[in-house]
Length: 190
Image 1 (cartoon, rainbow, N blue to C red):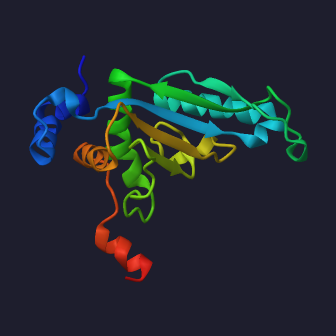
Image 2: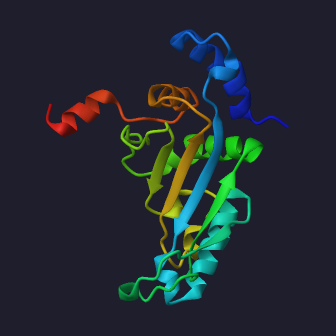
């Protein structure tokens, strides 16, 4: 079954990208390969129940059971040893990826208080984009009354290829609300 956002990508976004960048072959357009949702739970060193609640929240948010990430280095100041569980992550692909992005763009991000859009500065050299959310309570799937530990969520949009300007345009056409350029100029004092 094709999700609503995937249908929009195929019917509207691909022709607009071809027209704007002069790309003749639609296979040369960058496409969203996967979305990685990550929760780093450093406080789980002292209490494993915190990690269990983070795993339950991540499962509710994404609809997929996360894998538990473990420490790769030992840091004595944090009482951290190699192999200790310190977080969880989910890699979403295909239909679940588009459904998650649709919910993120249309439901979750508008729930953030005083939301002006996401930053332009979070692209890496390969054109991938990352967002950091301060708490998991903004997701409508989570019941705010049962949250015991407020936990941040990192979301990374991974593309198969493409320069930053093309992946930026693709995310904009898919509905990700970027900050207005005038607001960015006013904050920098220019």
